[in-house]
Image (cartoon, rainbow, N blue to C red; front, side, top):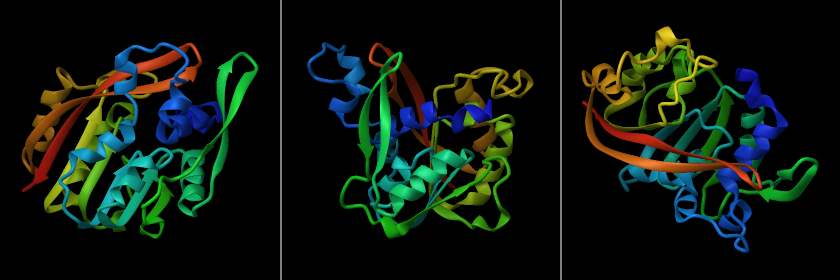
Length: 244
């Protein structure tokens, strides 16, 4: 199923998800439930769960097309974004050069609308770099980070425990970790034997509490537009941790 993230369809949907304006996603001339508007800008809101202080290094795992990595750069001297999808990383790297990306918002059938993705202003693009990588098998020389962000990643990994076991080595003592997951465990991505045996929240606590303190929890909705009449509305559990 990893190949699904290399399709033009998914790339366009994620560019809209990360960079589309409210009008791009939910045109004002149509009536939308309030909850749909509240689910916009997920890639920005999850980064907002970090403290407001300036830090040295930040890591965005499962960065997709890069919006959260760029948001991390507002308060970080260096940001690395890593994703398994080559097409997502290529798109994020193009945007990091200050360029714009054209993409198509599918309306229905063969009907689409041309849109343009670009990084919002006041972001230090020179602070951000992107690389393709496997969150379960990260390169050994990544070093440690003041902040690690992983949104909607864990329940898409074949062996999620591999990442959880690596996290203590990625976050500096005193550093921050933000995890977001809708806990949509699917056999297409994660073999059922590798799912949490019970509640995802308790599974995270069981596997992280030796090295991290859980300081806060939240629920963050998100909205992915597929067509003019079909949307994915989901809600992620956000857990915020401090490294001992």
